Length: 291
Image (cartoon, rainbow, N blue to C red; front, side, top):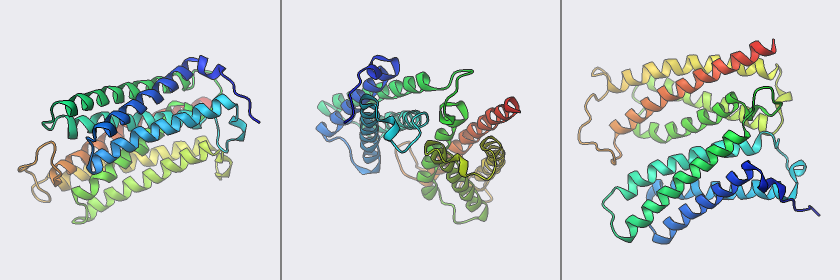
């Protein structure tokens, strides 16, 4: 029978986890109580808060019972990966919920509960960021790959690709082969990033036919080149008068229209390119230092 150990909660990272769980729980409890959520935006916000709350409880449970060795994942990589993902999920909910619900003319109890939910969602985001900061690798420290800067960037890359997939269908990509190429870039890079995360968290990097650092460096270079092409091609075939719709029309910030989706994909593509570029720089430094 596993013994309960309280010392993990006495560490700063333990405080951050407890705070994050509480904030996420309060956020979704307020929204569910007032019933101010609907559609895919509301469903995503509720899912994000509930997932983060449950995942943090599981991590705390394993820490308290000292059952890290019995969990079939690398404990040096798993918790920080979940924390990074939770930070991004809560951040997205902190942006989406006020944009689609609080700012749409609600008043009275709905407005007060909505604002409170946004505040606690932002607090949860800050708590998860604090956990990542406290858990990430320090210079000279021996730890898991996911605790390093390139490892954390893999989580950002994967999450950004998921957001791109949400918009790319509304943006329309079937009219030109160049836009289909962009979709292929997003899919290939997303699959490889997730594969790296799974291999590291599952401690399966020995399955690779080449050393992990060499594989990561080569993959980062290929991903940068692929995203360069998508960053250039997508705006041309979406906003150039010869190929796409160059006018915004009657779209506003809340409406689901092709223009908004195309802009979102273009911005996210450029942002993810910068993340991949940073990943390549850090991965190259790791290879150089190891050599």
